[in-house]
Every structure is written in structure tokens, then in C-alpha cells.
Amino acid sequence: VAVTPDGTRLIGGTVDFTAVYPLDPSTGAPDLGHRMTVPNPASALVTADERVVAATGDTLILYQLEGMTLTELSRVTDPRLAGAHRLAVSPDGAHVYALSFSGSSLTGWTIADGTLTRVAELSAVAGLDRPDGLAIADDGLHLYTAGFCDWNIGIFRREPSTGGLTWAGAAFA
Image (cartoon, rainbow, N blue to C red; front, top):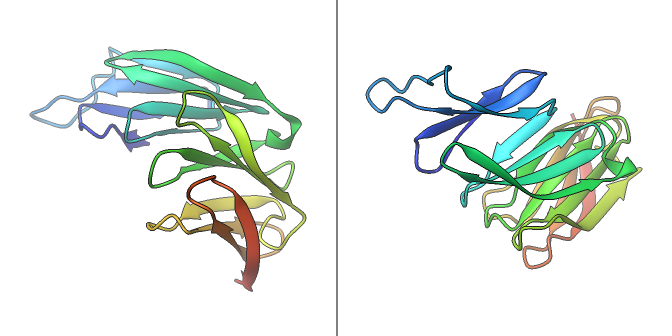
């Protein structure tokens, strides 16, 4: 669930769809009768510049949100995304990161130019054994994962200009 930066729309849904709902300015309640849907995402997020990134199966989809309309900008299908279910966006909005539960991997993608281009891929390190949690530090210099099967917190250094990641270690949870 996310609220657009201007506070007028809610992005949320169920396992079957993610929808954009207009928010009533006086009550803050979503208008459930008016929605635009994204089918079957495992995860979705909205960036500060009103782009929506959705993960479904082994596919990432980048949309531009204008009012109640989602326009697809880019789509990438990649086996390294199998079971992608957690997404995080960099503080500058230039990169999005996806965790693959099935593939035990972390991938990074540039989104600033309206296309999805892979800039990072990591697997087989502590914190990525069936990863189930993902966070980026407010300063954008580190990214953290939670490994479901290895009980490790993966620590990754992030290069803000490229979106690249380097494994920096792990903390046993």
C-alpha cells in the first residue's frame, strides 16, 4: 500500500490485482468504485515522480501514473526475477530493487529514463537465502535484505550514481 506524493491517490490491492484509488480529500477514504488495476502483482510501489513499478511472476513492469491512468513505459521478463515479491526504490527515484524469493537473488534496475535496465544482480550470499525483506537506507548508500532460510540480514553497499550493489557482509538475526 502506498499513497501518491500529492496525497490524492492510494495504490493498493490484493494478491489478484493492485489498483489506483482516488482519495476523498475530506475523509481520506479511497473511492472503491473508481479504480485502475494492475493484474496479479506480487508487489507494487509508487515513486516520487509518480511512476508505478509492479512485480509479477518473473516480470517487472514500469508505469507512468497520470490521474487515474497507468501507461506502461517498460516491461522486462527475466528468470532472475522468478518469485519477485519485494520492491524498494532508491531515495532519488532513479533505481528500483527486486527480491526473488524463488531465485534467492537481488536485482537492481534503472528506471530514471522510463525503461527498465538491469544494473545489479547478486545471489548466493548471506541474507539472500529465500529473501523476504528489503530496505534502503535514507541516504541511499546501503541496502538491506532479510534471508528467510538463513536468518541473516544481508548488507549491501549501493553506488547512488549507477545503482550498482556490492555485498558488504551479513548480520546473523
